[in-house]
Image 1: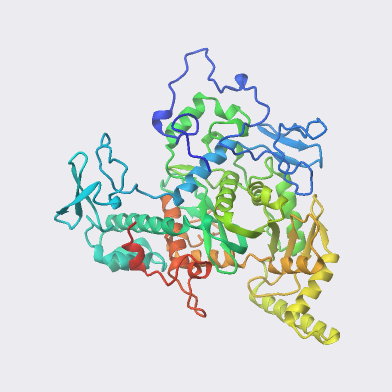
Image 2 (image 1 turned 180 degrees about the vertical axis):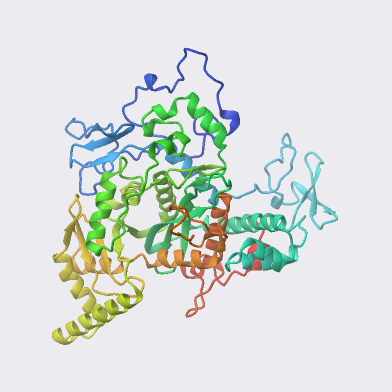
Length: 609
């Protein structure tokens, strides 16, 4: 990924970047009447506007390019007012246009997790020739100069003779540092904030300050390990991707609407390592300044992909899209559920946008909510960066058109090279416990009967035999005629499962294909989502009642949206590096090769680069 330029539209959104009001009669440079572009421009090497049908010759060919015979690969059509689409002249597929700049901004936000939180210590005098030269370079540049009263090492710069101190302990200047471990463990063991304060014998304000410290340490520790992932070699990665919603409580009695944020997560199914969990919320954005600038620019009058703040939910967006949910509440079979998911996506103005803000929801009181599809695109590009050393990547994802588009965009080159494959996985989640047990028992009988009738000695061989038969008899569902295969094996976590190979370019023999279908599962990410609900008090499910008109209240839910990402970050680090499996006694980080032993809470709390 390229570095952000020091000036221009790619800069972070801050109050100081908001331009003054244009004089009366003048048009803002980005006013709709000055808008001439037909397609969104590429931004810092990012261009996602192209056909996302892997079987089409235009797959991955940027909009605006001509075909080999000189004809246009695409034309622009309208889905709804403000939502232009590209129409592929090769296969007829429609795809919504996106702001490449918006995706770049969202990706830049995520990439900060792989960058050191603080620069390595060096001479603080900016005009000194040793400024930027780390103290670790040794005696040629610095000499030791004693310690401070708190135990921090002091150095003297040999170039400018300036003395400065470098803290050797992350807990320096912290009171009650001996309680950090207790609080750390309480956070990831479903303890409410006020109970943490009571158990640790400190006030709530101090608890929040220590949560910030613990979060900084977790992020710094994770950065030191995960920054190595892009250069690590992996023969195969089997990853599952899904998203989960979190409710933020209202802060004003007169406005009792919730804010609902969505986090997308990716797990490695074999090792259970959670590569990332990104929330569609940016706490660094000044909402008031952005809203004012959007009004001055007439941003809401521009088609969505051409807006300066395309990735952010503005008040104008919210007021335009809020509506009463009409989701069906009756039980459905897995096939009908797959069909209705296709239909619901097709009916949206933007098929890639899973956001469905309703009348009982509102935008955050601080920071700004990000359109989910921009978080999805950036999330998969982040994964693509991490997986550079993987020989093959198999991606199993929930049936969601936004996830599909983002995955195919980020991995398009690897898909063409047959180094990446993606599958939809749909699971019937409406089974009761008794129904799950019956499904598991019936699947066992079917497999046992096949083994007996055909003399198959190995259970795995029997499952693959059934899969090959079901692949040849795949069920065609949805407008795009996707071929769905129902898995013969049932488990308590996945009692009824169907898979669709989205990147089937041919060339795999039936045994290889059956093996891939057999590996398709969301168990890695779903198991982690269960852990989030069980271990984080702030993020447990809210309670619906017949009297709250669709609103949800959770006494433990956060009021500040930024707390959601902090909690998710802390738990992800603990899950990956500290919580060992009951059977193999290994953590996910040990299994994937990022650690040689279990990392303790103290190791993270007192880690220093």
